[in-house]
Image (cartoon, rainbow, N blue to C red; front, side, top):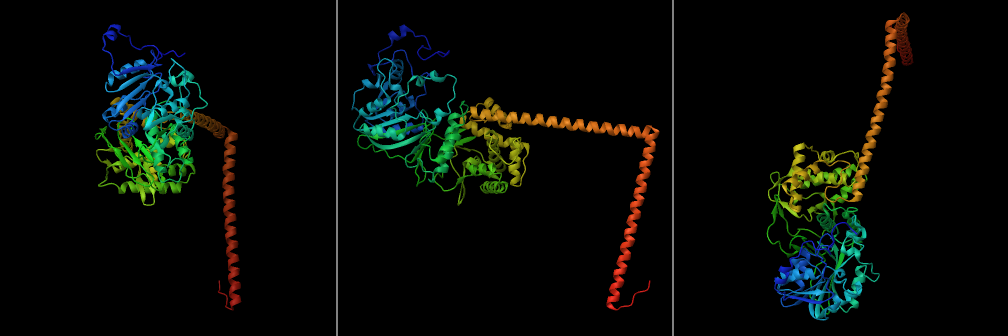
Length: 623
């Protein structure tokens, strides 16, 4: 058993007098099977409840005024508030009696049921929402229902005109693959459940199970990066379609979602690499964090989009179709400004034929194609400068690095950028920051490139800027790093002390440095290998230098002994005089042979000239 306190032990002492004096909760009903000494709200033992702008948009779209809604399992309070504000009649099913009492007190307009799913009456709700899945609908106070049976039971709770929203966890998802924790099997509450062989393990199996339960599928999505906090939903129209014009934009927006979700979290490997490979292979459905299904007894009337993107901490949501422009679904509640940055809205471009500039640069670096790499860098630098007015950049292009730029037939365009500067940014700072960010990814990601692995981020940035015909100074680099710190501070809400530490980490990037955002065990191993390589390289260089110095010392000692011998002894002086005489005689002999060769050459030239005169019949000149 773990040493830390578990959720079964109350974290705070209970005042019995206060409990007895508290008024009864009229909106709390116990239906049977509730757990008395358990809580699903302990973050140390249980997964976080579902939340985020995507779920708020879906909940509000399905649950209109006057509709009866069942929320099955733990959910964030903001989602329940969203349903109540939409005018729905909400019933909330929780297995923990402690959680049920707290939620009933916090939401007096919500009917809270304390118990298990098996005690629920069928066919009585217009909308059934289970964004937490079905795992935490079982109870230790009774028989454990298998996953398939609980999915069937949720389907039975939908009335003849009702709708079911179910978010099912994918055990083969990226979030499970990269999970790294010392607790092993007993790390969280979800780890205590045995494997269910009949559990739907794919989106097709989940859809088939819901269809067999008597519901018709309206929409299904693959969820990224993880079910508890979905940020990107990929519809069936784009899943597996590697030729879709949305594919480059999807790579950028999915990478941003994983970066925001896993920044600072210890993982086995960088999830962005796995997600990028899955997107290139068209296998994103197999490695998604989960699958979200909307089904209805007849038709739900839900009009979704091929891709839906939303804020995890906020309400902003927008949809994208393969053949259309991005559509704003939920606007920003208010303009968010932080650390000199402003939150952006809907991207201007999503579906376009082209390639991501970062992918092309990584490919050219791996193949050491310096000529084409220089062309790409020059074109990117020229495009950025063309966007400037009076040497200043405005809008998303000022903070767009090579991972956010799509190269199309009509020229480069900026894809999904979450923040833009409030004040204009000098164009030189923007160019340096973009190429410096690419250099950081090359080094911290152990990417192959044409230059020595011992190059630091500043060295690589200098080389890349040199391809565009300009240099870099230390103040320019610090200004570019300050811009990156401002972007990260706006995204993460860093305090001044954290900003200072983050800036020092960015300035210290060199071979052997771990990634500055998502730190994985694999990346730590690669960084350790690079450090060992550098150490062994330096040791070999030291040994070689010592050997060279020792060899030169030996030769210098020998030469010094010879010089002293020639200068101090009579035999040495005789040998010196003999060698000097030999050199003089040899020099004179070489000069004599050279003069003789010159005379012979002159005589031969004169003979050839006389013969030519005779052949022409001309008289020979005297002398």
